[in-house]
Length: 265
Image (cartoon, rainbow, N blue to C red; front, side):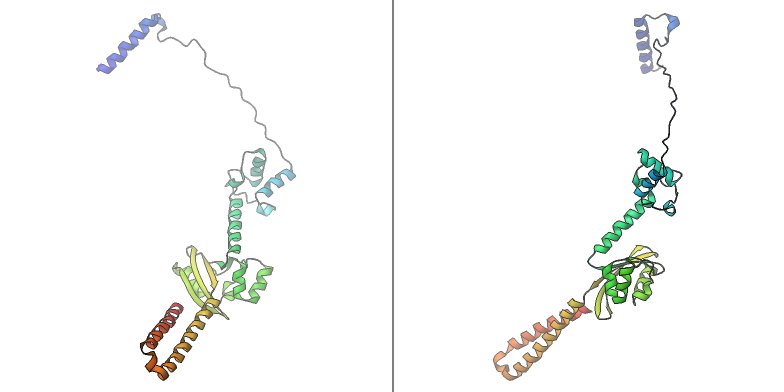
């Protein structure tokens, strides 16, 4: 027997001798009954009327019988059981998956509509999932009028709305994003960025109208060319007065033109 075990035995013997219990009562029985009688209580379930159930269902966005998917993701067998649990305080709104999905979609739609750029989201069949008013406006008067009747243009054929839809097809197929692609649409110059949301299934596009900026650059380039032309004519007349200053002016103006033309490329 090890030293530790022997010490434990000795301690136990000391405790027993100190207590002076009769040998027949070692180990002694419990003097206090710690058992407890637990009575089974019947659980009563409240029964709610149709109007109460319907009101609870509307809280989670279920307004018709078609909205009652009975998917069971909340842990209840049916949407009506979930509604009853809501009324009893045993369930919460975020437990409904379809409700949370719709809520997230509404938030995304609100964000898209308030963006200062044209935004469109399309699926693998090149059908519009969602877009904002600015996108419809950029696509032309006809698309804008359709948007006013059907906000979001959900399900619309993207090929018929955007003539360069092959750019979106390319991103859907390759998964490679396109950034700041400049295209001409009617009388406008647009900068388009296309990105993957769900690979090979959903892509999004952001459109910026850069027509005004492009026109300003063209004007600056043209005016710079005019200045160079006039400057050279003047140089030819009074070359002996201007000397090297004319050459320096020409170099500076040419660099301005090259800079803007490189930006356009």
